[in-house]
Image (cartoon, rainbow, N blue to C red; front, side, top):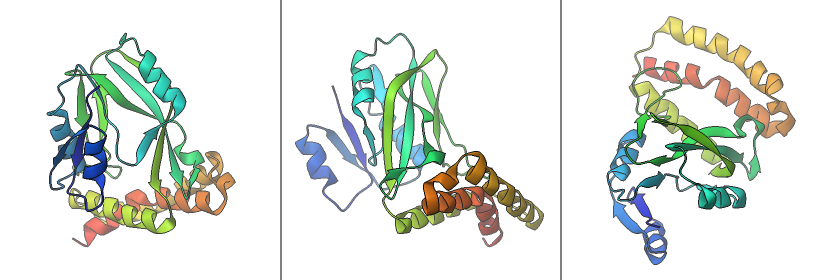
Length: 218
């Protein structure tokens, strides 16, 4: 098994740990999510690619599924669950993502939540047969509220740079956000996660409106 790590010039011990584990490491200044993943893909020299981020981990079931994978499909979807303040969130349970694929069969596309052309919220797409692996990809992206707010501000600002909004669109997005909040909180069960769930439901519902509002201030 060959492991390749793309490091965006981190200031922690990523390089030492990765190289000590036998990984090939390349440092490169951060550009954007799509460009970074495409750059990493250019360094793959194996028939198959499993791409994960630094804040993701495989549970035991998913690890076993990968080991038993027979290659009968060109790509494999994994179900990702995101944690917030150390616990899984109902809004972020079992998000299906293509992460294992045969070289040459997948492409990467950006999907900005509020529209526009910002290279963010990227997804791999396979042109061939796709199957699903058992197990869960664990996503430990938000250890606390402060981390969530920093990332939320960064992501909405990045989306705003690729969008030319209007005051009318922004007002409509805020109105739609109120309805979406109630759907996420009660229809999707976010309220069952307590304060964490209500907070994430509100911020998620208002994400497009926040992007559009920031685009007006550029």
